[in-house]
Image (cartoon, rainbow, N blue to C red; front, top):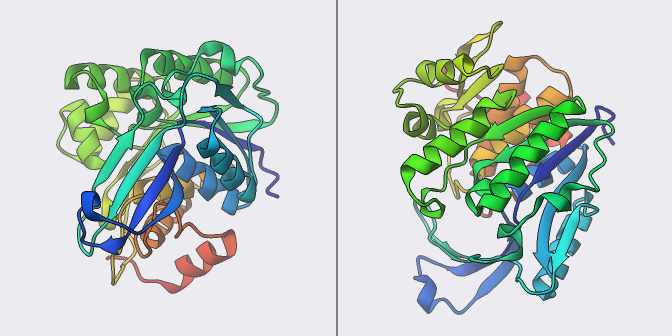
Length: 320
């Protein structure tokens, strides 16, 4: 187990059913396999596979789907101590297609789910001792005002206990009332973070800036310490008071499934921070896990152990 402290995140897990039939519309698929999904779940799994002590905060229904979530988290060595349960609301559900090219289609049952009605009091039992880093995304906060308020409270309380706060906008416009509200609320959370990890297209929507440096400057002006803009296959752009530059991405011959690549990038960066590596090395780790993620089907199946990650970085070419 890594001794660099604990990693903590908050989110809504999705009980997922994925099609086994390629390029068949979801309404006609007959064969499926189940899986566990969610942006924060992806980050938790990735960090646990790299050897960190991971805690996952959430709320589930008291149902068979919750039992599966618990089982999956336990098998990945992710603590379930901070999961609460509802007797009247269900665990969220996701349906995913399988495609030979492009991005898969999704269907959801998450309105009024247990995870979309999180309350501040559910955070009362959090032990912040040795919590080095708290990571949040824009998905959880988009589900309800209660979730948004809970996330802000977690960020504030974590900082008071000395934790580093990281934020990935991970925009889900369909979950917000309108774009104006989404932009305002996401930027409010980002400005309260130490490190922000937007994708370039997300950053353009949120800031009105066209370039990666423009996006970074927007958040740095708000008081954020470091901004790392994800550029997809091209790598990433990093800017803080000591670093200003781009790292190239890794060359991938066959892209199978891009879902989870952004979360994988976050895992690489956050694990580097917790290992106390420099910013460039952390971003390279992110680019490597993002590349590994797209080479296999599924949201997080390609996330590596530390040994596999180091080998991939040492033996694979990057764009010039």
